[in-house]
Length: 108
Image: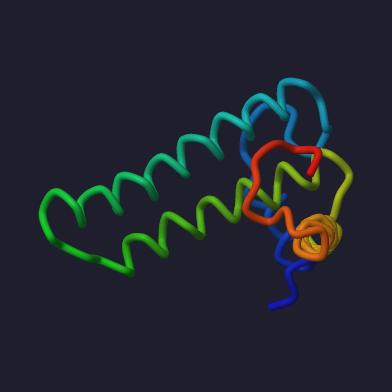
């Protein structure tokens, strides 16, 4: 599936207040949802440390929820998933060339 097609499709499953409007309420809802789902990924990974169990399917399921929130959040900001990938690619490439890939801070 094309990632931008996926992003468009996510709107059909977006059943929250002001979905597709780019409003502050939508941004807030999506940012909280993204954080919540990322926490679920972390919880699955934590179980590796605690229990010695590893369930890649469960981690992938939670990662797919993270992807949904990223797609919706990017859309609410007027960006496609391809735009987002290009932005990250450019940022990391500049840091790699500058030798600052392992540093800290936004302005590297």
